Image (cartoon, rainbow, N blue to C red; front, side):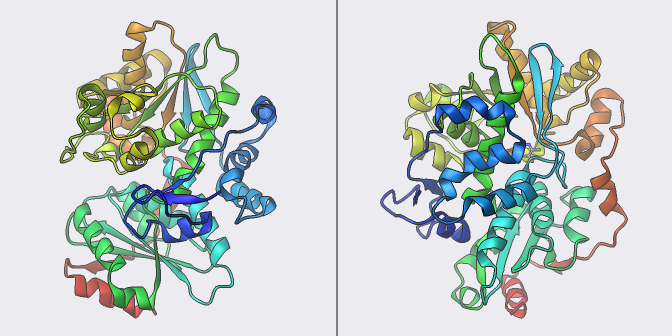
Length: 433
Ligand SMILES: *Cc1c(COP(=O)(O)O)cnc(C)c1O
């Protein structure tokens, strides 16, 4: 299997090159040149396979040239070592709980897989690989936790001071070892600019082998294809395949669902549920793609005005809206509707959801206005305890904090303060050598 760039479709590289580089040399995102279709005989036995077995079956065709299957299996068993429950909340509705990993959000799937894969490919290499990641919260904590103690790797996380939650900050700043946190006096965009500049700085490039763990890395996206196969295999008998509702920001998870379908998985409608940041539903409705400045909402991990995976969706579906609109619909909801949904789901089912998952449950409710009784699987993207203030506001109930979040709360924070001067950042990077 070869990979190409969303900019230069004639570029060819191996899975390993695509993963280690992160971003294509022409600035595009890597995509597989073709989407493999899984044999029907394999699809038929999915219900008897474990989660890591399904992940291996889905991922193997992408990595077969660079990674023996037995090693892929080991990586998958390590990366996906937590439960992935499909929780029925009523006869037709299930929530795929993707938040039982170390940072209690679905980003653990991609971050842990990427970390182990990079560790595997750099094992025995003379130079360590340095992962730079700018974060508004969730990505940095998942990447830091995923890479903790992976030999041959070092992670530098840049986060905006005072703009991440306490749990997120603790998850990034208390690991030590190969993880360094930089507390930047600025915004997420400032962190991102520092990182982008380092990637094109020849002095830094000569000294360090840099890579990016932001969600554009193809090794973060591909593990997100596997959980749709898992969900489908565990949903049980249903008059029609369930609709898949994906709370969306950068549209990585949605890309995963669309790829799963191309790989032969029988899925119902795929619905991208977004908050007030409605660039994609507006594109599907009007045919005109207008990136916007993001607006702040309660489901803040989805506050994205120009989703970076649109480059991949354009690659697969073209620049016009209709081909994409045949496979994907999208709905946008307000914060008020998010809160109402959290309250309603708790009242009707005794089930607490975080604001991101709630956006998905809201969209399923809307879809059912036209299609009563529609079976649906909503992706549960974060544990409610990560957004306890909003959960309390909506329901009056304090969500229970999972053990893995409690564990980091009383460890000492260690972060290096950083100004917005690029020189200060590049001096820091060069001091690592
Ligand atoms: C990142 C994130 C999302 C958005 O996922 P995309 O793949 O970027 O669309 C949704 N919910 C939570 C909790 C997240 O952390």
